Amino acid sequence: MRPQEMVERALELSKADGCVVIAEETSSANLRWANNTLTTNGVTRGRQLTVIATVDGALGTSSGVVSRSAVTPDRLESLVRAAEEAARANSPAEDAQPLVTESASAADWDTPPAETSIGVFSDFAPALGEAFRRAASEDRLLFGFAEHDMVSTYVGSSTGLRLRYDQPTGKVEVTAKSPDYARSAWAGSGTRDFADVDVLGMDADLARRLRWAERQVDLPAGRYETLLPPSAVADLLIYLYWSAGARDAHDGRSVFSKPGGGTRVGERLSELPVTLYSDPNEPGLECAPFVVAHASSAISSVFDNGLPLRATEWISNGTLTALLQTRHSAGLTGLPVTPGIDNLVFTGPDGGPTLDEMVARTERGLLLTCLWYIREVDPQTLLLTGLTRDGVYLVEHGEVTAAVNNFRFNESPVSLLGRLAEVGRTERALAREWSDYFTRTAMPAVRVADFNMSSVSQAS
Image (cartoon, rainbow, N blue to C red; front, side):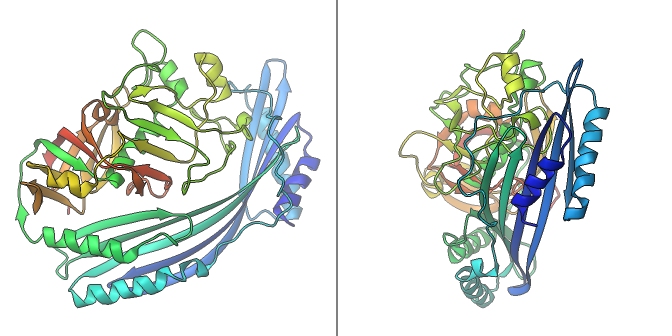
């Protein structure tokens, strides 16, 4: 049975007061390699069906959500009944709202799901082979993987929604090592179709970083002028974005809470004219233009499924302008409804320099290429801790002169916004720590005068 038919049949079976059905058809292709040799490749397919039942009661509306994979038509009714039973067993939902009705139905609702295949690597794979040959001839080992997913999402509801979106998501991550494994460097790239991935350029950059590491220098913990490339900035700002729930801020539980009550919306966070925004139509980073929520949380609500998404500036010219809102939290805070969007762009002043240009005008500092094991220490300040990995370098007199030992860092991305000394040119970037969850970002390199390396790490 086609996914659209599964949605329609589930809605027909529903006996609840309200019902939302999300069907997701997934196909995935991948390549993996080690020691300059392709090791595996494959293609997988899958389907997940989520039923959200809502039941009205004297005290309010409750919801029940059940998701299952590989659901067959004969098991569809049991899934619907399970969601209804869960709704009846639950207490009234705090985030209950009328189900969305305002979105225009998808013109391509009846179109079959989009699919990816191993053919997506038709140009990438030969270039990867050339990178293998070049690395082998220069005593360099390459390890990594490339993945491409296509997810077709269908959202139908008892209020008449019929929405559909095809989401391509690709990424490639490469780690280069010296033959004795003493030196390593990482690079990654996000993509929609692999047509824009320059694997030979990535390899050239990795080779340069390994050469930088031929000289090793030990430095103590302390605060250093530090250059963070776009991938490291993405890791920090994705965490900030995930922590920007309006409900938590309103309740005094986050860095975006205003002392004495309310949120910090309207407060200046950076003296530089930086802007952080999301836009479902951002070129190269396109994502679903409507809410798809499989569960309710501090930053999403199953009742908002199908709500249209529009370009939203979270920080405008250095000032906090919006937080992640459901319709319920917007009612509590009195702020506009601004749901989360699956991409993130950070920009600075026009004409920002490249990372190489920023290195060239650094008298002495660190180039910190990768963050790892990022964990939250204090939500009230959004203090994060983590390790450096695969590349911390010493910059002296405008040149990278050595690799440096790894550190544990303690920093808050909100505090960093207020201490930015320079913001570079925005480019597409892949976060390393969070690339399994969030790949659609564009970030600049930044300079921070006093990045806190709290201790020396023995990790390697």
